[in-house]
Length: 108
Image (cartoon, rainbow, N blue to C red; front, side, top):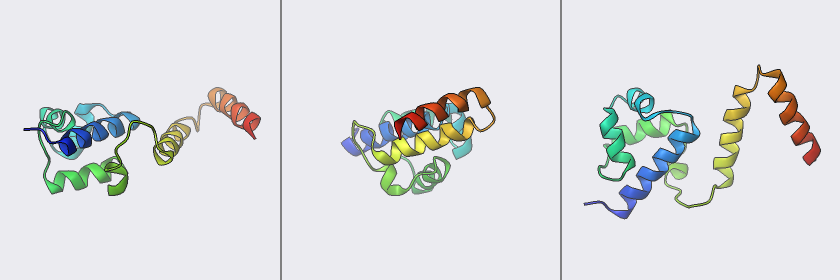
């Protein structure tokens, strides 16, 4: 039987996985669990062991507080983390970096 916390935690893990640009297959492999196990966790149909929970926190590079922050809106930490990850991917993309530079410069 699904509990609210299972469902909400699964949704949160899925959201953070996607923010990190990871597929279920990739994250499951990094966690050392089957893809269908991760799918069950994300849908709230299964709960994970404490060991898997620790691996999720480490692999998604979040604090336990961040993982258990439920809400429909993006919080500042989520948005900041997402922006930093995307910014790192632009490091060697001069054209896109110029565009972002112009946007940010125009904001301040």
